[in-house]
Length: 289
Image (cartoon, rainbow, N blue to C red):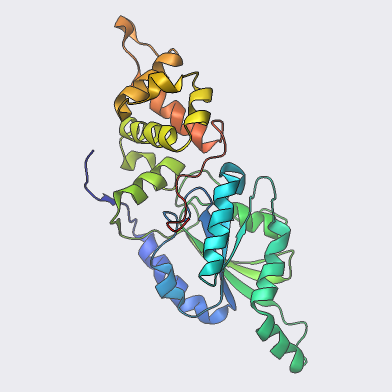
């Protein structure tokens, strides 16, 4: 497998980093949105340095697509590090009503000071940050109760900051998605590509399908084999390419001459993983779990 770094850094993302730094003074808390299936890979390592000591809340979005037991491990892992984390889902609405509660708990000392000064009606302000296509626009729309942000299932749609009044008693500053200049760990880039956080053109579709097939079989052999009508015996020991070919064969993706259309198999596999048709799957878990 090639070991070269995967690079993806559109020019507007450098602008976003400056916007985050410049606007921190205007907010009380930073809400960081991560993909519950890949909390580590979807966490921009530059964010911690950008926000410094500002209070923060981590939201593990797309929780309905992730393995619930692994998500619990992540929440526990964050708690051990002194970070509040909440699994949410903008499609099912899971825990969205708890975001305001968590924000007020984290900022309880500040709210107490406001009360002492007779400023009980002062509205809290939060900044929401996260990588592209992690669901920020959908979350903003759910919290505002109306369509404020443009939503598309592709990275890099929100390009400008915007203030939104939420239905949970705080104002939200929505920032464009921001990635970092390059992924030192190739696995991070593969995870982001598999979940659709970076454009599919960054990695060859067939290669990504091979990588994903092997990862799914290694992590969730039961779900993988059930979905594609495989026996674990016939899949065991196959390399990534052979595994993708087997999936294509089972689905009848044949071309003239009886060859298997592995590109079509890869596209199908990516689509079914992203839409949770294979099952609720997490591609990474806490290192100390």
